[in-house]
Length: 121
Length: 113
Image (cartoon, rainbow over all chains, first blue to last red; front, top):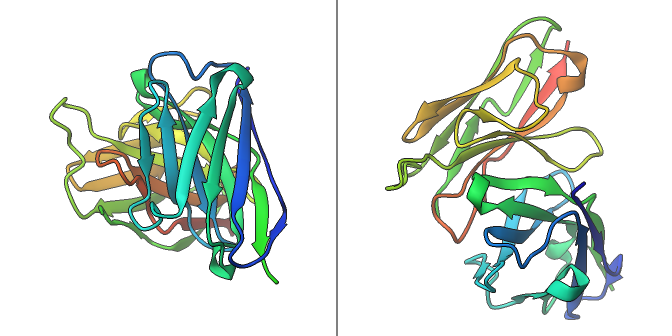
């Protein structure tokens, strides 16, 4: 059974750095073709992809946010960590992590429940 | 970045009636490997998005067969043959031919009359 769960602070102040952790089970990020992405959704708005890390440690970032994002993995802990620097109120959103199984062609086949992050002083 | 445009942005459907959502991409989603990287997701109220359709027309595990996807190149359609109450939510199309970034459509909200 594949599960993902996001964790991190519910409230951050402007200019601070946000660190989110995705803890997953039911698959290994050392398996060829496995990838995990972060996606966010501001309240009442559409989905926005942020970053992806692959089984071979390849990393991809949103073109508009890449200077602020860092994604990493700890395969032994089944975790993927996203950091976003210089947080602003417009970054208020629910942040999701989701799996991609590249070999099957299924992008974002499983999602976490999401974690709401509010940016406010 | 590839822009995904959905129409309509909202629709209200009587249970048992069909529904159709269009998604157009600013570039062809046909890859040189022969696959077309167009996906459909449904976000039910208060829930995370869930994968419905991958690579244009393949239903994901557990997705009812009343959902179908079609299209090619830059024009795609999601059809629900007979809408049920549990189908309410926001539907998103997404492309993954060009990475980065993945890009989503604006979403189409489906309501029941």
